[in-house]
Image 1 (cartoon, rainbow, N blue to C red):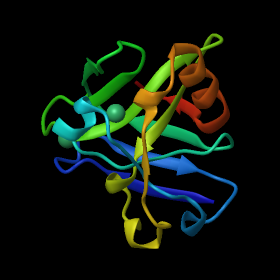
Image 2 (image 1 turned 135 degrees about the vertical axis):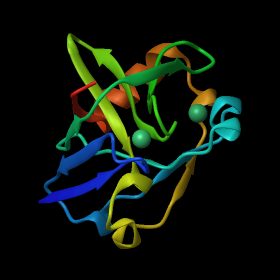
Image 3 (image 1 turned 90 degrees about the vertical axis):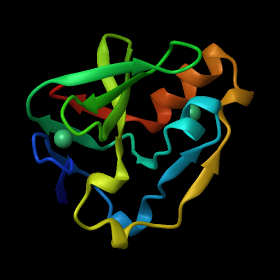
Image 4 (image 1 turned 45 degrees about the vertical axis):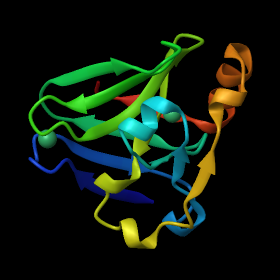
Length: 134
Ligand SMILES: [Zn+2]
Ligand SMILES: [Zn+2]
């Protein structure tokens, strides 16, 4: 299944391919201090492929410097969160970019700050899809 969206200035187009409907994907809302200051809801699935097509990104790192937060350099919309895991860029996409956000499952809160570095990388490896285009 393919779902599409874009950032608010339309510089970036996003297309995700997933093996399940959006209603089976729960946007995750992180409670770390970075995400509290930069609120977002992200979705991913190990079988998800995220294709981003656009211009320039601005990259921020969160508190522990592990993950990259990719933003549109024009409108500052968060595009995706990602990290290189075993040689491949993996990530989760900003759920609010999608046109069909109303179809998504119930948001869930996550507390990654309770995890140490290797637990986080392990979790992302099981949870994140493939991220292309940034
Ligand atoms: Zn934009
Ligand atoms: Zn966070």
